[in-house]
Length: 212
Image (tube, rainbow, N blue to C red; front, side):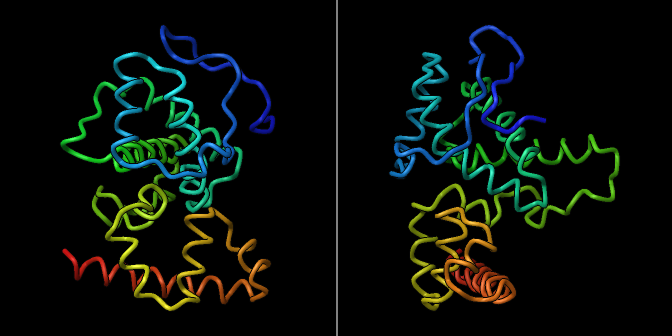
């Protein structure tokens, strides 16, 4: 399979963006985190006006986060990018079904991504590789960090972590670096990165559960 930046054709359907595959990169425009209201407005523009510029902004924001989400399930980079494309195509097609009264855009997008991940694993015809969904279908803490870093609850909980743990979480989820990249950047063993990440995530879960 060609690299993600290579041109491929996607399924032709009326009013669906076609042609060159959108690259999953963190663009300059995506560096500023849009507010939940801004994200909801973009989805509305896609739903009611088939606004391609709004869709491109959504793709630029969610694309890298979705790729990180899929990579965390031990999928290859090529497969992860394929699933990002599939997820965002569903966002385009199903934008009219988004209900801001029921969920935020990040929750909605990552629910689509989770279903696509499960469908992909089922297509492998090996049910044994299907990972359990620990939250019973609800958005997990990992999804919260990847898709909703503006969430005040998450941001407040992060301040209760040690500086070392905060650094690991911010590099991993907000800067979307791999654990190997984090180990190289901080000059610490990969095992230390893994243990700090695990401890930080356990601490965050406990803090967020106390707030509910």
